[in-house]
Structures are given as C-alpha cells and as structure tokens.
Image (cartoon, rainbow over all chains, first blue to last red; front, side):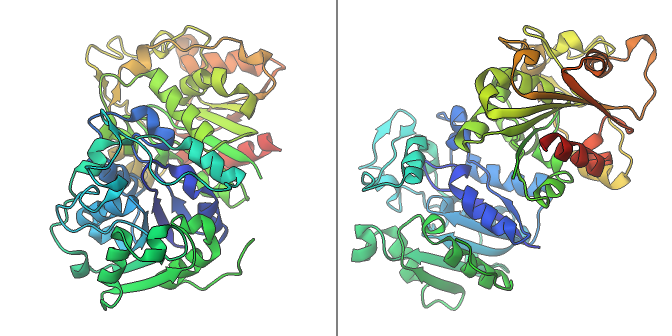
Length: 244
Length: 233
C-alpha cells in the first residue's frame, strides 16, 4: 500500500480529485486530498490573511497529524507552488514528488512571478479575491459545468507570496517527476507559458522524470488511467487494469 | 456503496478516525472525515472567532462541495453538536444520523449547558479551552493521539445550536451508540448517559452499546465499523 497526497489547483478544491482518488483507493492505496484554506469546501475561510504559507501548512499538517511518511506528493497547477513549499519543510516524509501541469517555482518565486492568474498586472483582483481565469468552457459536460460553478476566488496572498525553498529540489532524496499536458489550451499548442517553461527546464535533466500526455490541463480528470499509470511507474508499483 | 461522513470530537481531528476509515473503505464505501477549523490538522487556523457555527459550515460545505447524498452522518462526542447544527442544511442528503457517545442537544442548547459534571471552570474565562485528559486501551494509541490534541476555541462550547425541527420528525434513521466500558457515575452520569437514557427507550431510535471508554474510535474500531455498516444496510 502506498500513500498519496494530492494537492488541487487555484480556485479549486478537494472535489476535483474525488474520482481520481477513488481510482487509486480501488488499488488499495491511502489517498488524502486536503482542500486549501479559502477554497472549495474551505471557501468560508478565505480572507486577506490567507497566503502561500497557509496552504503549505494545510498540507504539512496532514502529514504531521495523520503520521504520513514515504508519500507520493502530487501538485496540480497552482498546487505545484504548495507542494514545493511542503518539500522544503518536510522533505524526509516524501519519497516521490510529482508536478501535474504545475507551477515549478524556485526559491522566492511567487505564482504571480511565474504568470499565474495572468500575472500580477493582468489578474482580476477585488480586495483579497483574485477571480477565476481561463476561457469559458466550450460544450462542457455536466460534470465540468458543475466544477466551474464551484470555483471560488483565490486569496491574493497565495499568489503574491514567494515560496521558501532553502535547498533546491534536485538535492533532495525524493524522486522528481513532471507531467505535461500537451493537447489542451492554445498555450499547450503554441508551447508557451510557465508550464512549458517548466517542462523545458526538467525535460533533459537527469534529476527529473518527464512525461507528456495528450490532454488538457485537467490531466487526472481527462486521462485518469494514464495519470495513474505514471504515478504507479514513479512509485514502483505494479500496474493495474484500466477502469472506465 | 455508501457515503460516510464522520465528524470528530473536541480537541481532535480527522486523524482520530484513522483506524475506522480503512475498515469502512475496504468494505467498498466512501469515507469523508472533515477536520474542524482551529483544531487537529487545522490548528493553524485557530482564533477567537472559531465557534460552533463555523464547524457546522465546515461540515455542510464538505457535503455540498463533494455533492454527497444518502449519507451516513456520524457525530462523535462534541461532533454531536456539529452534526445537529448541520441538519437544518443537509437533512435531505442524510439517510442515517448516528451519535457516537455524543452530545445530543435540543434547539437552543449549547454544549456548556449540557456538560453537567464537568469542572466549574469549564470552559473557563479564556478563548482557548485545554483538552480534557483521556485514557486509551493501547499505549500506542495514547502516544499517537495525546500529542495531537489541541486546545479548542471557547466559542464552540458556548454557542447554542440551531435545530428548526426535532430530529425525530425527519426522514432519516436515528442511532445512538453509548460507550459503556466505565461504570455509570453517581448522580446521572453526564451528558452522554442522559442522551442514552433519552434514546434507549424511544422506538424512533436505534440504541447500541460498545463496552469501552469514551475513546471508541481508537479502542474499538472494528466494533464501531460493524455497527456503522449495519446501520447503512
């Protein structure tokens, strides 16, 4: 049995991982999908004091309180900011660190620095709330429409605050993996934006494993079996029959 | 497949269910164990503003955001206050409501008013209330749980619960599980025995007992899971 901790993206929540988490659980694994403060089911806790440190602590505390170790830690999109901060604080509890079309900051960089929410200058900011971005959904499935309706404003401090990473990821004992979506947005097709920059940074670096999947940004929702296969390979697990 | 939502007690956290979760999950069920704001893994969010209403919203939001239905909703100890307060919002999503050695308040009652037999100073003048001493059958559970207990904001204990319709008038089933491993104290025995008295003779309630002390999810996870699975059937 392997322990997975899955960290969602900006404006999201635990709910975005539900079906993927159940896919992993069906393989006998333990899966935690904390909702970050101010978002999703925790949207009633949003405010001007919520920042990246808050989100890093949200996830760090799951490790500490549940007593987790040897964890496969996955960050999706903005969740890459969070898992980077977690990897800086409790590297000894992580065996595999995985970025899923995610921000890959260096020490001191904020999500805004990397162009998150369009960057500080283009983001739609109302007080402490940063509005959800992205093109309107074209022909959304009922499930996608439901998710869109659940998106909550992202607390400004989470995008403004730089991550603290005193030791580069590459010097840690855990393995590092980057999964890039290559079939979704116009950014994917033009190969621009931070996620492509991150992909180019790690692609030929022997410290990293690199995978591409022909889907959009929501990789675990679009290609759950393929994402699971990658996580299994990373964690050295025997593959299971695909579902669905 | 059944959906369980398990709500922990005072000074606790989601981790308090760590022995129960796998027993329900391995039977093919989905289990949610929201951590209440300000305690446990959410202790970094503590403040004097944390109260019962906030914890009710923690649970209601978990149910709405995950869009859970036909739930077995379980409140343990202080969690009985929280699930009672959640019912006005989620009654139609709940199929079975279970109190585990829990407070069973009526509309307008705060925990403080029910917690007879507790020290005079409870919950005391400060905004944080320190954890009560608890004992565990297994020293390993004591070593796991003890250091993870966090002080809890007083607002949780002094804010009255709102319950617009009595539980017995709702469509969901009702169960009370009493921990009976310790002899009933003189003079009534406190809020959980009072709740047991109220429910054990009432035909609208299913009443069960587990022979251990209050820390049922640590001491008797298998017995507890078996009762919950039976309730769900």
